Image (tube, rainbow, N blue to C red; front, side):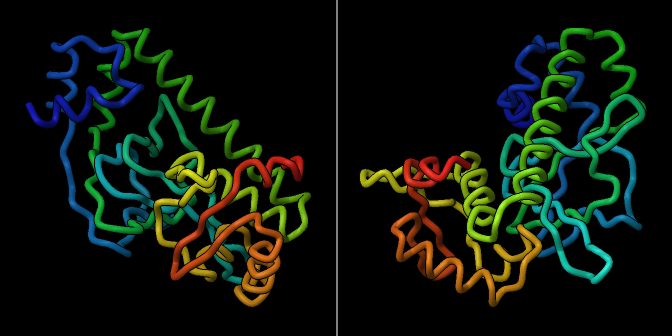
Amino acid sequence: METIHYLSQFNLLQSLALEDLMEMEELTRITVVPKNTYIQTPTTFSEGLFFVKKGKVRLYRLNADGKQFTSDILSEGNVFGEMNVISFGTKDHYIEAMEECHICTIDPVRFEEFVATRPRFLMSLMQVLSDRIKSMSQLTQNLAIGNLHDKILCVLLKLSDQLGVKSEDNYYKINVPLSHQEIANLIGASREAVTVALQELVKAEVLQTGFKTIRIHHDKILERNL
């Protein structure tokens, strides 16, 4: 029943009746993944749908020079994976646990049979997929055309929307530890360049930094027309 309660918290699954959730529970298994462990690499890909029950995972690719480029960071309640009937575009990605994660895995064959008889659930799944593609497309566009400062702010704004905690001074703390190197990985830049850019953004009072912590001011970022 604990798994059923967990599954019912996903927006994607809220359209399901209790008996459907009970059947869904039979299709799933939960795996505990230690911090800094790969859930998937391009060479270990296997079909399936995965829900993040607890923790945060990072999706990234490597360019020709071996530099990491992060596509997304997913927290509790998010879904990723690929199957015949649905794809979140993660096949060629490295997927790494940023902290200890509980990952719920759904059997692909039985899931396809489950979806085939529940069109309303399938529509919800398609909406989640559409939103994810739109979000990643916008992020890719912003990273392609912006200068270094704008790239950093664009990524941090996205993370604050997903993981931010607002304080009374209108700054949002991003609720995941981020080093300068990790921010560089998010935008495909060097750590040295990111360090300089962050210092300049702190002076402009757009953000505040601490040890692996970032706080951003939404209003001041939006004034830059990102």
